[in-house]
Length: 194
Length: 264
Image (cartoon, rainbow over all chains, first blue to last red; front, side, top):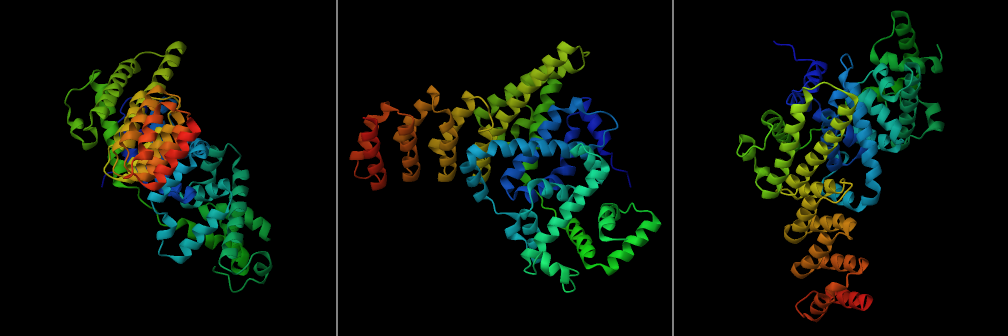
């Protein structure tokens, strides 16, 4: 079995002129990125836009990619910026985005799994940044060290942020599952395994 | 070990990077503490959320774009009939014209990448790349407006609003969408996008023509409202015709009547 070419090697090829290698990276990451965006925004049409935008940006900024830079955190940093720009543009054209969103169905509505649905709803209750942190660290599997690069903070501080976001998610999850927050949490027992 | 200390270690625990002693302490604590156990369970649930794939059209579009981009860089000149052009979304003359512009620019840039980097050149290169990206976006919008699926055409309209400046080709494509698109939703979205360029002569003219041609009452009403908002008195005659035409939807006639009094 041949070993797949590492992302970083592919990105260096893209940087050095083999733009077609970006197609391989696109194939590798279109689904994780799209899933990340749909979980973050709940809008499938906008999520496809964003995935496309991320790869156009990678092509645009390919010359700024330095050897030795881990590709995934670099890509997710671009993904975060794309999302921030997109959110900024969205306000004056809310009507348009509503129309696009209405044409698609949200991932949450289609989930056959109640637990997943509940978790998805609990995620939606969190502030954008906390939801993003949890999706990057647990859903996309980025390590705290990589996340610290993305958020420009120390690894220790990143761990605290992940932990706090998890705490908030638990509160939201318990509230939505009808088993209460703070008061009932203390009595625990029945909700051990959520 | 208390909850606070365990909380600090949970990210490492989840990543599997704890040392043996710390791991044992954390595990012992979690076994006896429901709250910390819930945190870990939730984190594991997040890991197991299903991934969702985007539509095949996204991949098709992106690969076609890369192909066109690569060909442009390789040839350094507009390609007359390369295999990439047989792709369905290149059929329209609008798209072909946009793509030619991209190929020209991309080829031009391709030649320059081999050269050394002086500061001035880098700056010039960045400016060229900006324009390259703008053209790629333009190509993308034009192609999306040609798609068979209404959702994709809606996305195309949505993308068109990302242009900071009015692009005559995109405006022309939006005006065509407004007049000829089979979906009322897409026509309405195009109208919404065009409303941002109300002061543009090309748009003014196109909106007036669309008023004459438009069949959907919903779009007619929106169009009339926009023309009133733009104080476009040149459409007064057409509004009077609509208002007097008994075969026109009553709501549209009423709206035309109101528009006439507001514009007169």
